[in-house]
Image (cartoon, rainbow, N blue to C red; front, side, top):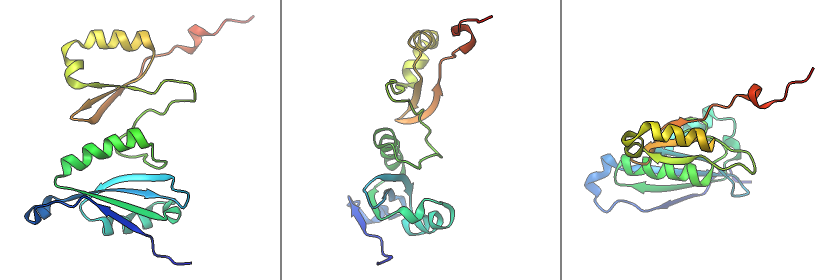
Length: 159
Protein backbone atom coordinates (compact mmCIF):
# COMPACT_ATOMS: atom_id res chain seq x y z
CA UNK A 1 0.00 0.00 0.00
CA UNK A 2 1.40 3.36 -1.00
CA UNK A 3 1.65 6.18 1.53
CA UNK A 4 1.32 8.83 -1.17
CA UNK A 5 -1.93 10.75 -0.98
CA UNK A 6 -3.30 12.01 -4.32
CA UNK A 7 -3.58 15.78 -4.65
CA UNK A 8 -6.03 17.49 -6.99
CA UNK A 9 -5.31 21.18 -7.69
CA UNK A 10 -7.61 23.58 -9.55
CA UNK A 11 -8.06 27.25 -10.43
CA UNK A 12 -4.63 28.83 -10.29
CA UNK A 13 -4.42 32.63 -10.40
CA UNK A 14 -3.69 34.11 -13.82
CA UNK A 15 -1.27 36.77 -12.55
CA UNK A 16 1.98 35.20 -11.31
CA UNK A 17 3.01 38.49 -9.67
CA UNK A 18 0.20 38.05 -7.13
CA UNK A 19 1.86 34.90 -5.82
CA UNK A 20 2.34 36.41 -2.36
CA UNK A 21 -1.45 36.79 -2.03
CA UNK A 22 -2.32 33.37 -3.40
CA UNK A 23 -4.30 31.36 -0.91
CA UNK A 24 -5.26 27.70 -1.10
CA UNK A 25 -8.59 26.32 0.02
CA UNK A 26 -8.15 22.63 0.72
CA UNK A 27 -10.52 19.75 1.32
CA UNK A 28 -9.40 16.52 2.94
CA UNK A 29 -11.35 13.33 2.20
CA UNK A 30 -11.18 9.78 3.54
CA UNK A 31 -11.11 6.65 1.38
CA UNK A 32 -14.92 6.65 1.20
CA UNK A 33 -14.84 10.23 -0.18
CA UNK A 34 -16.32 11.58 3.07
CA UNK A 35 -15.24 15.17 3.64
CA UNK A 36 -13.12 15.31 6.78
CA UNK A 37 -11.88 18.90 6.83
CA UNK A 38 -11.90 22.19 4.90
CA UNK A 39 -9.20 24.79 5.49
CA UNK A 40 -7.32 27.78 4.09
CA UNK A 41 -3.55 28.27 3.92
CA UNK A 42 -0.82 29.99 1.93
CA UNK A 43 1.43 26.93 2.27
CA UNK A 44 -0.44 23.62 1.86
CA UNK A 45 2.63 21.41 2.41
CA UNK A 46 3.44 23.05 5.76
CA UNK A 47 -0.21 22.96 6.81
CA UNK A 48 -0.51 19.26 5.97
CA UNK A 49 2.64 18.52 8.01
CA UNK A 50 1.06 20.40 10.93
CA UNK A 51 -2.18 18.42 10.59
CA UNK A 52 -0.16 15.17 10.46
CA UNK A 53 1.43 16.10 13.82
CA UNK A 54 -1.67 17.52 15.52
CA UNK A 55 -4.82 15.83 14.23
CA UNK A 56 -5.82 12.33 15.34
CA UNK A 57 -7.97 11.96 12.21
CA UNK A 58 -5.06 12.66 9.81
CA UNK A 59 -4.32 8.96 9.08
CA UNK A 60 -7.82 8.68 7.57
CA UNK A 61 -7.00 11.28 4.87
CA UNK A 62 -6.74 9.62 1.48
CA UNK A 63 -7.32 12.57 -0.88
CA UNK A 64 -6.27 16.21 -0.66
CA UNK A 65 -8.09 18.62 -2.96
CA UNK A 66 -6.54 22.08 -3.37
CA UNK A 67 -8.22 25.09 -4.98
CA UNK A 68 -6.20 28.31 -5.42
CA UNK A 69 -7.57 31.84 -5.07
CA UNK A 70 -6.04 35.20 -5.88
CA UNK A 71 -6.80 36.63 -2.43
CA UNK A 72 -7.11 35.28 1.09
CA UNK A 73 -10.43 37.10 1.49
CA UNK A 74 -11.93 35.16 -1.42
CA UNK A 75 -10.59 31.85 -0.08
CA UNK A 76 -12.02 32.56 3.40
CA UNK A 77 -15.42 33.39 1.90
CA UNK A 78 -15.50 30.14 -0.06
CA UNK A 79 -14.24 28.20 2.98
CA UNK A 80 -17.08 29.56 5.09
CA UNK A 81 -19.63 28.56 2.43
CA UNK A 82 -18.06 25.11 2.05
CA UNK A 83 -18.26 24.46 5.79
CA UNK A 84 -21.93 25.44 5.80
CA UNK A 85 -22.91 23.43 2.73
CA UNK A 86 -20.59 20.43 2.93
CA UNK A 87 -20.46 19.88 6.73
CA UNK A 88 -16.92 18.50 7.07
CA UNK A 89 -16.64 16.02 9.90
CA UNK A 90 -13.70 17.61 11.75
CA UNK A 91 -14.09 21.38 11.32
CA UNK A 92 -14.39 22.15 15.01
CA UNK A 93 -12.27 25.31 15.04
CA UNK A 94 -12.63 28.59 13.20
CA UNK A 95 -16.10 28.90 11.76
CA UNK A 96 -18.63 27.36 14.11
CA UNK A 97 -22.10 26.57 12.87
CA UNK A 98 -24.74 25.15 15.14
CA UNK A 99 -25.45 21.52 14.39
CA UNK A 100 -29.07 20.52 14.31
CA UNK A 101 -30.70 17.24 15.13
CA UNK A 102 -32.49 15.17 12.55
CA UNK A 103 -35.87 16.76 11.89
CA UNK A 104 -34.87 20.20 13.17
CA UNK A 105 -34.37 23.17 10.91
CA UNK A 106 -30.77 24.33 10.45
CA UNK A 107 -29.74 27.79 11.57
CA UNK A 108 -30.85 30.69 9.42
CA UNK A 109 -28.29 33.18 8.10
CA UNK A 110 -28.70 36.93 8.56
CA UNK A 111 -26.35 39.65 7.33
CA UNK A 112 -25.07 42.23 9.81
CA UNK A 113 -26.73 44.99 7.78
CA UNK A 114 -30.16 43.39 8.37
CA UNK A 115 -29.45 43.02 12.06
CA UNK A 116 -28.23 46.62 12.40
CA UNK A 117 -31.38 48.03 10.75
CA UNK A 118 -33.68 46.69 13.48
CA UNK A 119 -32.01 44.52 16.14
CA UNK A 120 -35.12 44.29 18.32
CA UNK A 121 -37.21 42.96 15.43
CA UNK A 122 -34.48 40.37 14.79
CA UNK A 123 -34.50 39.28 18.44
CA UNK A 124 -38.30 39.08 18.41
CA UNK A 125 -38.24 36.90 15.30
CA UNK A 126 -35.59 34.59 16.79
CA UNK A 127 -37.59 34.22 20.00
CA UNK A 128 -40.79 33.54 18.06
CA UNK A 129 -39.33 30.96 15.66
CA UNK A 130 -37.06 29.37 18.31
CA UNK A 131 -34.43 28.86 15.59
CA UNK A 132 -30.77 29.90 15.87
CA UNK A 133 -29.51 32.59 13.50
CA UNK A 134 -25.95 32.99 12.23
CA UNK A 135 -25.08 36.66 11.68
CA UNK A 136 -22.51 37.09 8.91
CA UNK A 137 -20.38 39.93 7.59
CA UNK A 138 -19.13 39.57 4.01
CA UNK A 139 -20.15 35.92 4.15
CA UNK A 140 -18.05 35.20 7.24
CA UNK A 141 -19.89 34.17 10.43
CA UNK A 142 -19.58 36.70 13.24
CA UNK A 143 -21.97 35.42 15.90
CA UNK A 144 -24.68 32.83 16.44
CA UNK A 145 -27.83 34.00 18.22
CA UNK A 146 -29.57 31.10 19.92
CA UNK A 147 -33.04 31.50 21.43
CA UNK A 148 -33.39 30.85 25.14
CA UNK A 149 -35.38 27.77 26.03
CA UNK A 150 -36.56 27.28 29.60
CA UNK A 151 -36.91 23.52 29.90
CA UNK A 152 -38.47 23.77 33.37
CA UNK A 153 -41.25 26.03 32.11
CA UNK A 154 -42.14 23.41 29.48
CA UNK A 155 -42.11 20.34 31.72
CA UNK A 156 -45.28 19.49 33.64
CA UNK A 157 -44.83 19.33 37.40
CA UNK A 158 -45.34 15.98 39.08
CA UNK A 159 -46.08 15.41 42.75
